[in-house]
Length: 397
Image (cartoon, rainbow, N blue to C red; front, side, top):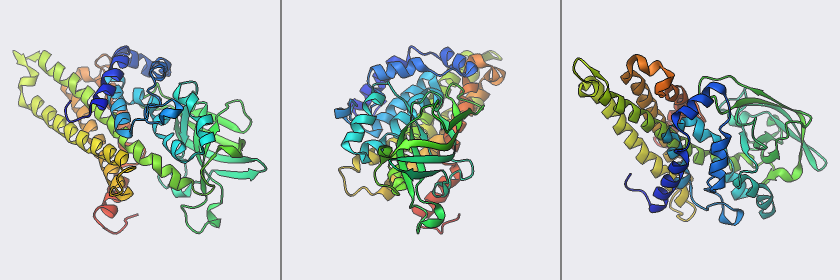
């Protein structure tokens, strides 16, 4: 890899060394059993990688989203795929708003144990009846003395079964009582005690990435302390946006990683598989689709690290606007997801019938690569966003 800082390359080398202990066979087995990859989380935490983008004074590495993107890119490319990256994904991006907007006392209380791997967090935003319409969230946190009582439902909450914390976005003012839809939402960093009254989790059976649990989470007067509120009440949507652009960069990196992993397996198979007296990779019908997929991954990689660099540099460069960051991060997520999907699909087709067999691993990659196309925002919504924000076209939804 060229064009990266020495720090980014050091991250890649160190993380790749850890991931080398977890071959494709490990991930195939965990995908089959649904068992969480606790060992990878432990090893990454032991070497300090969970806190890669969190402040040094809290035990983090103090690096940027660029380096975090490189870490998740490397994990995915190792063969761990989206599942491996998602095992620490939320701990990286969902903590960004906490690190930026929490009080010093809250940061000290909430983040060091997470960085050390003693606690884990999940991200509670999506609801079954709102989907991408975040401003219509209805889960309500009602003030009750020095606590809030939370009632409502979240869905597609990854790692909630193993998480001990949740970054929760809930409505503290009913939607019908606010002047603007963006008002009345508040952000909390709460304990996720599975034995506490008013909390229920239901695991969702899913197509891919089965080692990482996805859940419906039900709240029924679930009590949380008032000192778990991050920032000011009613400002949660503005606060959580700080993590959303970071997530797009991270997921783009994960997509690129699984795309390269698939392409490597396809190229190896195309060199080794001989039919009619020659390697199938000598045929342009095989070679050209793989070459095209590689070039699209390379282009998506440039877009991804450009977006991450803008995100990181915006804290010291006032010429970088949030508008520019939003366009770059959404574009990167879109391009990376599409390039990765094409690479994974072509990897399966290059293998022919064997691409359908678990032992070649590319079928697992293809099942997992749907995630960056769908989450956390769909392709169509990104095109709506780019049409409006970049091209100045009328809002279409």
